[in-house]
Length: 328
Length: 249
Ligand SMILES: Cc1cc2nc3c(=O)[nH]c(=O)nc-3n(C[C@H](O)[C@H](O)[C@H](O)COP(=O)(O)OP(=O)(O)OC[C@H]3O[C@@H](n4cnc5c(N)ncnc54)[C@H](O)[C@@H]3O)c2cc1C
Ligand SMILES: Nc1ncnc2c1ncn2[C@@H]1O[C@H](COP(=O)(O)O)[C@@H](O)[C@H]1O
Image 1 (cartoon, protein in one colour):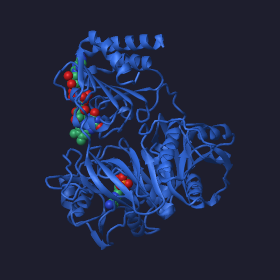
Image 2 (cartoon, rainbow over the protein chains, first blue to last red; image 1 turned 60 degrees about the vertical axis):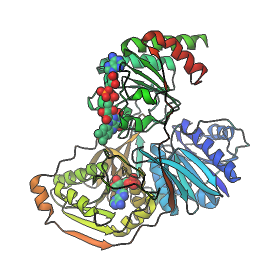
Image 3 (cartoon, helix red, strand yellow; image 1 turned 180 degrees about the vertical axis):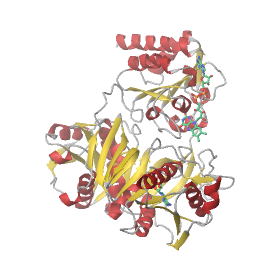
Image 4 (cartoon, chains in turn blue, brown; image 1 turned 90 degrees about the vertical axis):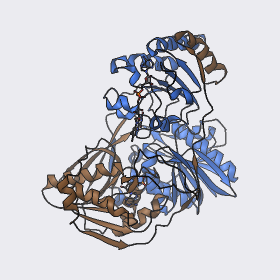
């Protein structure tokens, strides 16, 4: 018996969520007292990336490469993952709750007639059974769910597990990448990849989120400066008020009807802290709020708050953080 | 163009959600139930595709109890032609529900099966891809833009930092994300007409879940935070605390 962890790559490079998924898989495998196998599918020449997975806790790595696996190929990935689960009699299969993982996991679950817990934030083993905690009702409640049968399929939310080194042999074994071409009905292309300067808000280590208090899209340069000072792991986020006003794209919206995020550090700048916004970010490890209204609800949930005018506080904050970074 | 849209009855997103007496489900008292918002995009897209094709029908289908008829009527009032109630309880995981839906969707009766990307109660984001897999159909999820020309489908789906283009040939499955379109409101005329549209009822029994909800919990309270100070002069102290106390810098 094994735990399998799906290691997501893009353009031949492991994504951060792959390392987090393997880290989560390691914890689950330890809880069950069994081996962890990472599964990496993608284009040829992935051997170096496959070897990296051992460092994050994979006992073994199953590597399936082919030109046809370069871009996300839903049917082929489904077939190969389902096959891996069956061949290794996996007790559980963990995927990231990324765009790809959320598309792929239900397909694999249906193929295996298995249960799937989506967007899991905590994993445990109770009496040999996999138990998961996941937000439901738009983040208003948490559900603790237990699997009635094996295999247990799970997608794990970005940043719920911090990628941690935990070296294991991570011996790489090839897996047959062939699938019946009859089954390949879908062509997927990553649309002319926008040049991305910052990580996606759902996966960022730090989020600098702005609200209506920013007064207009032109003032976002203040938040960009703060994000730049914080480093390449920082993403920009937004409240719904700001997205509805057209100041920022929907992809940046945090909250019940946007993205639910759990970064180690969240800055809420000029955001009041409405319940629907809190639903999206209250599991952040550390929340910092800047608001001119001492009664703003966000200050009740923030670990640290500054009461004041964001137009004075934010530039100073960026400056102090730059100073700190340059001191090392 | 014959289209099936799978829809679900869910608590309105503005409702206050409270754990019920059994500790495993919600207290539905006082909650307003609505058509799942993502399913509204799916219904709207189906209507537009049918209108563009100038022929065909839109069937809305749900797995649920008697009360789900109201949800079906809402979709009929938007303009769907007919409705099917699969009477039985959906499962907490996606597979049980997907099995019931897939069994009711007959090959040859549709060109396209549409879904919302996610039900806002279980937040599973599972059923559409599962139904596709069970029916052996190609599928795109989290779709923000859809083009159907003859039987060729081009869908844009949201991925981190951009979009992915998914292409396949009909028949197939699409799951709608916000931004796909702007759903219409049912008109008064539509609401009247909906009462006379066919609504078929089939007993299918409860869906069988592969996992169980052990417990529903309120979110843990966050310990009350601290106001570090007022104005820009408080910034150095904030930065010190972030580094030394919270260790996040
Ligand atoms: C069904 C539903 C779903 C929703 N989903 C979401 C969601 O996903 N995400 C979301 O964010 N919201 C959501 N909302 C909206 C939510 O209820 C709030 O309306 C919204 O979050 C408010 O955004 P805001 O905090 O930016 O604006 P406001 O509430 O207007 O707050 C602005 C804040 O900025 C402060 N401020 C103003 N000027 C300054 C200054 N110069 N310096 C410092 N501070 C200043 C003010 O004191 C105030 O606290 C939803 C609502 C509904 C009904
Ligand atoms: N009980 C149900 N009856 C019909 N369609 C459903 C049901 N549950 C979910 N769906 C469809 O599947 C989509 C995704 O649901 P879920 O996987 O539960 O998040 C929904 O937006 C609906 O389109």
